[in-house]
Image 1 (cartoon, helix red, strand yellow):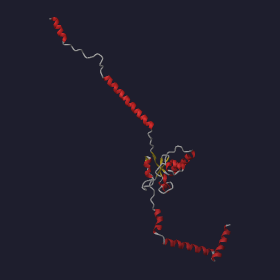
Image 2: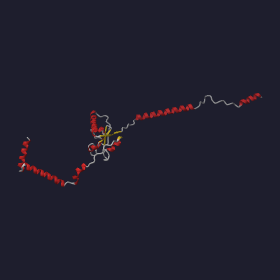
Image 3: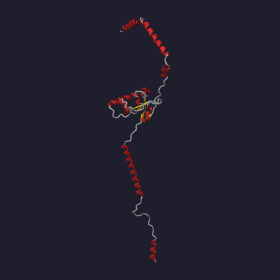
Image 4: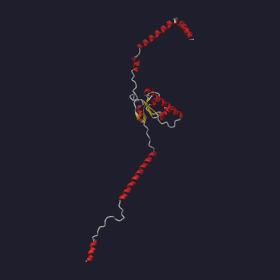
Length: 227
């Protein structure tokens, strides 16, 4: 089959160009070489230096551990500052995605997820602002499975550099319980103070325990009897 195609091609070259196949391919190679040389002479300096600039690109710095930080602290690693690493969190675990800056950096298709815990958005494949959160409550089994796949991808491709600090909100019930405990403590302290004051105060109606004072009138009565 290939031999028949080659024979057909040689016949077509001879019929349309009047040249032998060897001469035709020799001329074609010379034309391509001349085009390459001429295009190199008229290329702009930027085009000539572009391959070199790619070779001289500095490698990415090694990932830096950030430890336990809040979601507000994570926002400063959204890629806006090129001197800072590009971080992203999934299920409370923070990963350095700097090597995927083309996807998660400014202008990338997933730039909206950078600097955030986008677990819910990844599970739902959503780009809505209300889904840019680490809250995964209420997700279905298929969404949770998709989120698990994303987590496995991050664990295998990127370096974990920290975790998100969990903040426990103070509810009204907890606040009321705290107030009740404070009131009970104050009542107990007041009761102890009253008991102490009661023990320290002498009885007004009871007999006096002070020694009897010798009356000065007794010797005068005795003297009157003697007279």
